Amino acid sequence: MVDVILGLQWGDEGKGKIVDYFASDYDVIARFQGGPNAGHTLYVGPENKKLVLHQIPSGVFHQGTVNLIGNGVVLDPVTLKREADAVAAFGVDLKKNLFISERTNLIVPTHRALDKAAELAKGNEKIGSTLKGIGPAYMDKTGRNALRVGDLLQKNFTTSYIKLRLKHQKLLDNYNFNEDISAWEEEFFEAIEFLKTLNIVNGEYFINDRINKGQKVLAEGAQGSMLDIDFGTFPFVTSSNTISAGVCNGLGVAPQKIREVIGVSKAYCTRVGAGPFPTELEDEVGEKLRKIGNEFGATTGRPRRCGWMDLVALQYACMLNGVTQLVITKADVLDAFEELSICTSYKVNGKETSEIPFQMNNSLIEPQYKSFAGWQLETSQIREEKNLPDAMKSYIDFINKNLTAKVRYISNGPGRDQIVKIQ
Image 1 (cartoon, rainbow, N blue to C red):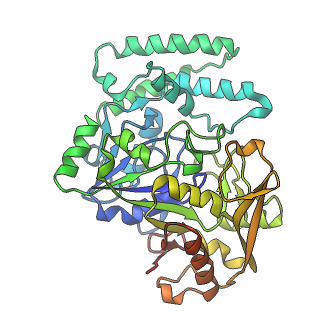
Image 2: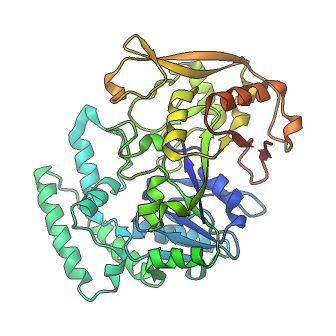
Image 3: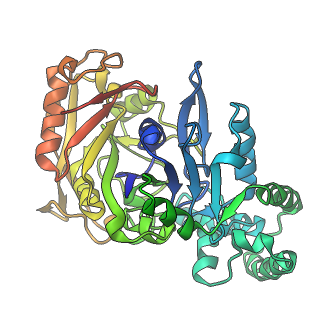
């Protein structure tokens, strides 16, 4: 069977820690979509040293657990090699516990160049791309031009690379993009040689064989549901299916193999980059959330936009994903607030609704709020539900009554042990 952990907001929900928390219960941790635009933050070792993983699954530090990068991912060999070096410093041997599907698409240097050129050309209409080459790599996948990890083992890989590079160069010429990327290419081919030394497997057979043997698989999502290419806040979205349906085509598993869908949401809301964000707080309250929550992108370092929890968007994400249990993260960030709010519905162009509109950026959305008293107590040391402040229990109870999935865990700090199980 396969369980899924994914984000229910615009990414940055703290999925890395949650995958790490559950990982010891699973035999395989698998990434099924996204690229190095996803940053999953872990705190590793006795000193709780911070490490951000962009491509390697978050179960890499658990002995006996194998990790798979699935075919739905777009892989940057340079980022992978850099991460491998960082992970090796903790004594982890990726040649033993990391496997990569041969159908995984590669990000090449000209993808990064195209990403940058396209974003610059948009001017004031930029979507806030991380400029990692993810969009162009997925475009080549759907355009049937992509290079895949399995191609590295073919004799004609260099010829295929040159052919793709020439195609990209014509597009770059149209953008009048003249930046020298020779250093990127040198780094790329060095990383390619490293990638060849890892375990390249037929991913769909690899994972189904383990499922058939009764092993437990945890599929790890990247970004968040509101960034899904089909159901997110288009066009301010990522280039892959971030919802649970993406597990099937991102790993090659059948729908009936999926059991639990564990959705992760912050106790408030954040978003990096441009795009609609109905509950955004552009005032001192939003700044306070950002400061206390250290809300800066794990991949880009950009300040995150902050706002109150949005139950309209959260219920939408629960519906799309078939969420069976919820994890609320960063609840301790709310400790300092005297009053809290939760968005319960929208007024869209003056009409109240509990549905996400078709094109959020073309609608006048007024969030309708319910206010709550804050608990104003430090909660980061609490480990049992019975010790949670009554005001926090009321906050969580309200969420439970308004969603189709129930909160089962509350994360109240970055440490692996800072989590409270809810009965």
